[in-house]
Figure 1 (cartoon, rainbow, N blue to C red):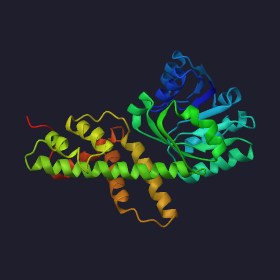
Figure 2 (spheres, rainbow, N blue to C red; figure 1 turned 120 degrees about the horizontal axis):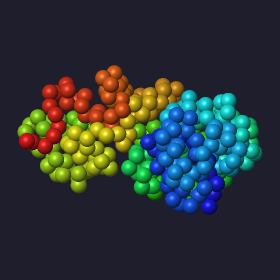
Figure 3 (tube, rainbow, N blue to C red; figure 1 turned 90 degrees about the vertical axis):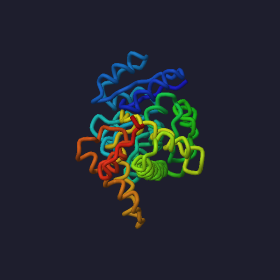
Figure 4 (cartoon, rainbow, N blue to C red; figure 1 turned 30 degrees about the vertical axis):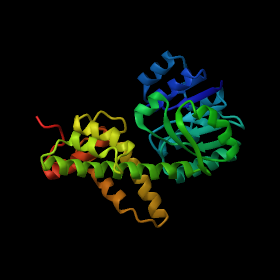
Length: 298
C-alpha cells in the first residue's frame, strides 16, 4: 500500500481519491477551491493538507486532477506548488486532460528537479470514476509507468502506456474527438427519427446491436431520450478538450473539420448558459435548429 498525495477533488477527483482509500492506500488530499469535496474525502479517511507543497512534502507519489493546463502549471510549478515540496525521486502523475505541450513543459521542469512525471488522462466520466473502471492513457518512461501502474489499476479497468510524456494527452484528445463526433452523429440520427414520427427509444434499441452501436450511444442516447442532462462530463470541459485538440492540430498541420464543427456547437451551448450540462446536450443544438425534441411519444 502506498502513501499518495491527491490534488483536485472535482467531479472526477473526489471519487478517484475515495477509490484509493478503499484500496487501502493512505491519501493526503488538497483542493484550494472544492472545500466541501475536501471535507468529504477527509471524512472518508484522507489526511487534509493546506497546499500542494504540503502534499508533496508528505508523499512520494502525487496525483493531480485539475481542469486544464494553467491549473496543472499552478499546482506543480507555481508558488506553494508540488516542486517546492517534492524530493528527488518523487513521482507526479497528472491525470488532468490538458494540451500535450503543457504536459511536456511540466514534465521537463519536473525532470530538472529530479522528479518523475507521467501524463495520465482518463476517459469514462463520473460513473466510471465512481466504480473505478476508467480508461487511463499514460505518457512517460517505462520505469515511472511500472511504479504507477499498480496504483492506477485501482482507478481504471484499462491502463496503457501510449508513449513518452505528452502521449497520454494526445491519445485523450483522439478519444475526445471520437466521443464528441459520435454524440453529434447520434443527435442528428435521433432528431431525424423523431421528426419522422418514430419512437427514438425504439430506434436506439434497434441500432445499438449493429455497427452503429457504441459505448457512447449506450450511455448518451438514454440520457437524451429521458431529457437527463445531469453532468457526467460537462459541456465546458469537452469544449476545453476540443480546443486543445484544434490547437494541437494547428501546430501539426492537421485538418479536423468535424472537430471544428462540433466545437462551434459547444461554444454556442456555453454562450446559452448550458456549459454545466452533460455533453449529451450537444443534441439540443440540432433539436433547436430542427424544431424537434427527442423524447418518447406522449
